[in-house]
Each structure stands twice: as C-alpha cells, then as structure tokens.
Amino acid sequence: MIKTMNLTRRFGPTVAVDGLTLDIPSGEVFGFLGPNGAGKTTTVRMLSALIAPTDGTAVVNGHDVIREPMAVRRTVGVLTETPGMYDRLSAEYNLLVYARLYEVDDPARQVQKYLSMLGLWERRREPVGGFSKGMKQKLAIARALIHEPQTVFLDEPTAALDPVAARTVREFIEALKTEGRTIFLTTHNLDEAERLCDRIGLIRTHLIALDTPDALRRRLFGQHVRLRIANVSDAHRQTAAALPFVQGARLEDGVLLVDLKDPEANNPALIAALVEAGARIQYVQPVEASLEDVYMRLVGAAGGGEVQA
Image (cartoon, rainbow, N blue to C red; front, side, top):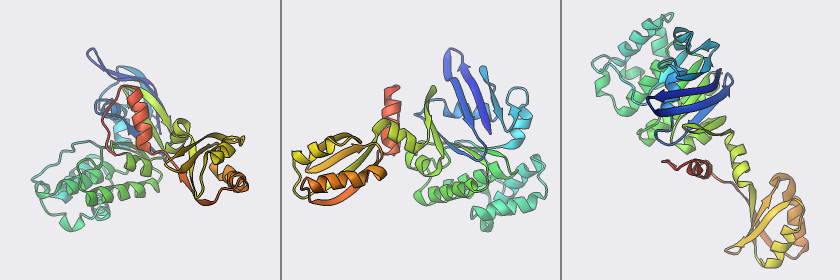
C-alpha cells in the first residue's frame, strides 16, 4: 500500500516532483510513466526512504517515510535503474550478503528459491562480473525480493535488455502479480506497461493523468469500429451518423469509421440499420488507440518528451 499527499522534492531551485498525490492499494501493479527527467526515479527514492521529501507526506506499507524510514526500507524491495553488484563475488554469495543484512530466515534456501526462479541456479558459483547485462538484471531483481517485501519498486527493469532477457523479466513480474505484492513499475516501454499494469500514472514533474489504460484510451479517443462495405457511399455514413448512439461517422479510404458510446451494445443496431439501407458489409473491426497514442497526447500537451514504443 502506498499513499502520498502533495509529495514534493526540490533540488535547489529545481522542482523534481511537484505535489504528487497517489493512493495505490495492496496488490496493484502500478505503472509510472513519463519522459526522462520527469521525476520518476526521484519519486521511487522518496517512497523507498532513500531521500526525504521537501514537502508533503508519504506512507508505504503503513509506515511514514519521514518518521519511520528504517521500517519502510525493511518492507520494500528496490531495483534501481543501474543496480550495482559485487562483481568479484558469485551470484549466490551476492544474494547471501543481502539476505543476511535483512536477517532472512534460512538465507541459503531463500537464495536458492530466487536463483532457481530466475534461471540462474546453475550459474550460482560464477563471479557476477562475467554475467551478461540480462543476467545481472535478473540477479538484481532477486536481490530486491530476497526478503519477501510487501512492496517492490522496479525502476526500468527491462532497460537495455535483449528481447529474450526482457521477456524473462516480464514473465517474472507477471508471476509476482499473483502473489499479492504491490509493484511500482517505472518504464519507458509502453507495451510493457499496458501488458503488466492495472493502472498507470503519467508524470512530468506533476501528475498529468491517472487511470487504467482502457479508461485513458476511452477518455481521450472514444471507441471506434471500422466497417468495410462493398458498396460504401456517403449515404451509409449519413445513416450511421443519424443513429442516437453514434458520436461521429466518416469515410476514410473506402472504409466507414464510426464512433460509438458502447460498441458491444451498439454494433447490432448499427449493422441492422446499415443493412436496411442497402449496405453489403464485409467485416466489422474494433479500433482502439494504443497506450502510445495516449502517452503522446498527454505528455506532448504537457511539454513533449521521449518515448519508446
């Protein structure tokens, strides 16, 4: 569980995070999106009690980040964007160090559990300095989870990974979703955010938007269907536009595009009206805006920024 109220962090005259208010329930996978320099990493550092806020408050797992920073740190796991490892030590010993620091019961068993889950058990005795970036990232995720934290902060968990390693990490995050942990995920990868996250927040120093991906799409772009009609004409567009539940209709490249309030409920009546008007319908296809479309419209309106599809 994460709650913030007007959380703010300044570095000298620069405002990195401005008045952030969030309420993230236990068990939610929350995606935190925004361009470089938007305040994502600074927010993670405040919520994990690594740096103190300048103003405002935050409670993580029932602990105040200002008054109870040690309690917060005991109950969270953090994967930083550039995780450091002891390169001369083995993967197994790297995790044992952290398991003992967290006073984990039976640290050897816990290390075996996470190295096995992430496919690193057979390489456990090798020095980490010889690992690929993907292997190091998986090891860093294991380190963030070694003490079974209630809340996990994952800062760009698949950044710069090859497709195979990135897929392994995503599958592991999906597995974590079933365990009831709260996962706070920052990423530039919009496909990843759409696939993994229950809700997303878009930030550019201040919070721009907060909702489920589907709700943001509907709010900004509505709901559309594409109809391929063999004998399409403007008369068919007018027939569709006259229906009370149609919010707009237009012809594009011989295809009729119709904006509907509720496609699942409205499609049968729309199709019936067009057939009665003589339309020979070949197919009906739903059209959805992507999360990239949502991102570009919202972040672009707030001042632009970088994005990876």
